[in-house]
Length: 135
Image (cartoon, rainbow, N blue to C red; front, side, top):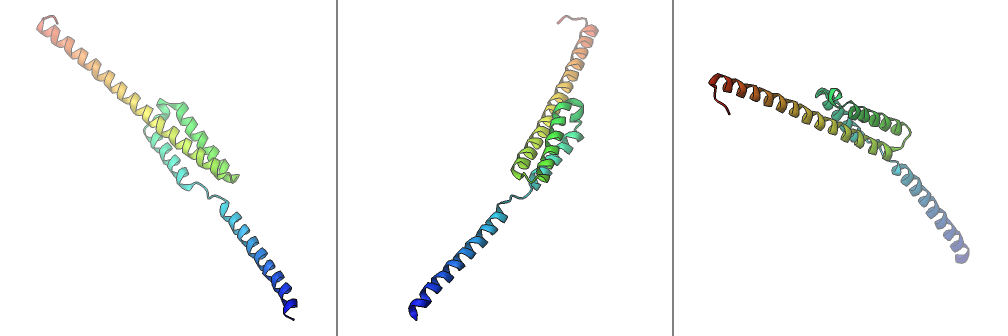
């Protein structure tokens, strides 16, 4: 009687192991789906909003258009459940917006420098004219 129970017990253990393995596979498959890149999307949206507030669209419209296009593409990738692509596109959007902000700041600084240089040159000419002495 001991012998007849052993094959049944082995078959039962095999079935239990197979069932446990199947459950683990299902759980692993559920967890392998990455979550939407919420933080990257928020960072990209914030970078774009900041760049727009700095009037980057007036100074570097192509960079801003690229930032918007990448963000839109990231949204499409999320809808298609391509989370890795969405993450990469959101990061690229943020970087494009940050680049636009940096370029805008550089252009504004350059314009201010040129304006100050022109004022300095005008003041210097006035001084020379009023004093009558050559340089």
